[in-house]
Length: 147
Image 1 (cartoon, rainbow, N blue to C red):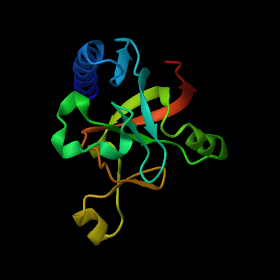
Image 2 (image 1 turned 45 degrees about the vertical axis):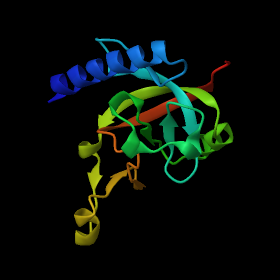
Image 3 (image 1 turned 180 degrees about the vertical axis):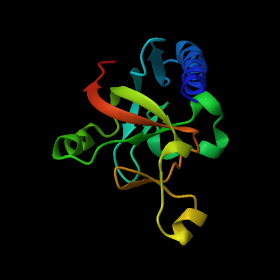
Image 4 (image 1 turned 90 degrees about the horizontal axis):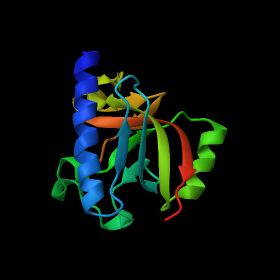
């Protein structure tokens, strides 16, 4: 399972990098074969469900109209006071360090109704996955990218 995940992550990185190199600032991932750690660059949406977007037009983005590498990525962020300060970077081009986690590997809901709605949780916080992505990004650190 882990090797399959690394393979999928590697393929995702190639697709994201190819898209980024031809279309300006798309979400960029750099991947090291020996490590799960990854960095991605994109525009931060830091309200409702936190997401990293391929373009700065956060409100004009429609995941159903987007395909694969051009979709946003839901963010899984530990609920700590330090991480809540990241909200001031809303709408900015940022670099996140962390790792990809399959959405299906997140914690299941406790109630039958929430399970029927396929709700998933990370550190007790619901991840709706409005991006319709197969992965979420577990972000450990953030930095502002100068354009």
